Image (cartoon, rainbow, N blue to C red; front, side, top):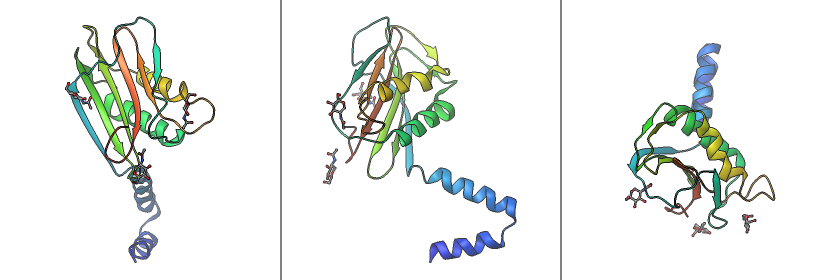
Length: 161
Ligand SMILES: *[C@@H]1O[C@H](CO)[C@@H](O)[C@H](O)[C@H]1NC(C)=O
Ligand SMILES: *[C@@H]1O[C@H](CO)[C@@H](O)[C@H](O)[C@H]1NC(C)=O
Ligand SMILES: *[C@@H]1O[C@H](CO)[C@@H](O)[C@H](O)[C@H]1NC(C)=O
């Protein structure tokens, strides 16, 4: 009934107005809700200079497509340009209903930084560098370097595991 009503509404809308509505619906269909916050960092691994990827290899598995969608939304729409002080974590948790995807960037080791375009690249390291046997079945992990830690962490059932 809802769909029928919407179809009628769309059919009487002008074509440019209808285009705006369908674009908005497609965007919101990706996930149900997003929680974003700044937190005090919980450092998972001690200081290293190189970019080191640690894979969880356990827990909820997700496909690559929603994962890149989440990473790019987090970086492009919420993170890039944000200042992260030493010891803080900027994170978002995207709720898809049957699973969630947690992504974050932390400033560690006395560093503070303004997030730049490396966000998209660094968060793809634990996506593409873990569970490499296929495109999907991604269980996530985190990247650590001298100044930061970037975490890509699928979860479900109310936890990030
Ligand atoms: C927020 O900080 C607390 C205390 O440092 C930590 O236990 C918790 O895991 C952090 N949450 C996130 C989402 O990083
Ligand atoms: C989440 O809960 C459902 C239903 O209880 C279960 O089938 C599923 O395996 C759980 N997922 C994980 C990752 O534990
Ligand atoms: C993810 O990769 C690890 C290491 O290769 C493997 O042990 C694990 O079973 C993989 N998980 C899935 C869901 O394929």
